[in-house]
Length: 284
Image (cartoon, rainbow, N blue to C red; front, side, top):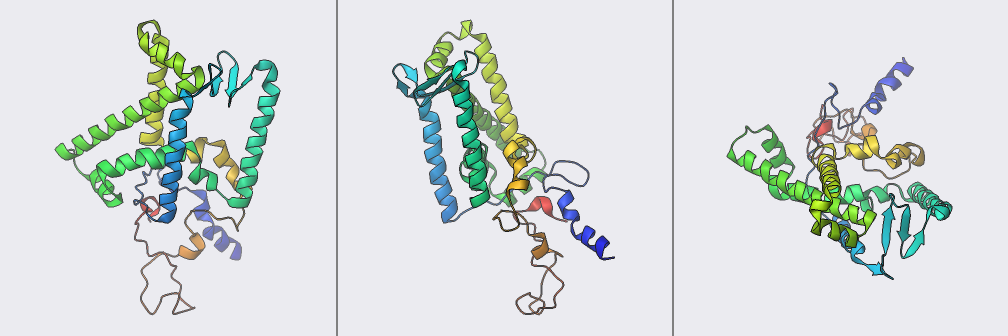
């Protein structure tokens, strides 16, 4: 009896918030965050974006400061050139970097995911801000999603699609610049008729970025990212994570003043009142 009760209490671990019981996608509409830590994240993200978009323009000794040219097997990291015969040094550096991130996670939790991961920065600090500007906060997004296709919805969806694709195209260009250098990219743009392959590559990568930030979103961290897969073995019960506390929240329900946990030790109601604000995908 005790075993079956424990199993029932652990059922919530068998599902994720972004997938419904029918196996369909639950689209999350988070409330617009605010506060001093969010402001600090915004400032850090601005610094990150400035570095990302300015680095390809910096040359040292007529070579890019940073370039990962896989086709020509030429890797430049902060002005130092690595050829295939030097790959073991490059490999050791990458392994060191990965081990550093793992140790950093063990000590500080998922701070890398929230503050430094490119996927998070582009999603939360670029595309999500565009979405808040066009669609509004969480409640407005939910209302728009359920709303019939009238002029307002068509206008907002069209505007968001155009802006999302434009930003995706810009990001794709800069990622390509990191592969072939900015000078080479500008030359390809000037002679676009002679570089159809480059144009096709840019369109493909733009569509990939568009798909990720328009539809796939947080599923990248859950399904694709290998670092996300490692989280289960890097964290323990004392690690700080941003997640729903099942033990503290269940069973859900509204509390009267008499039944409030601060006023009664015998209450059977958890602290989650099932308001669904900010966690629409995990409502019962």
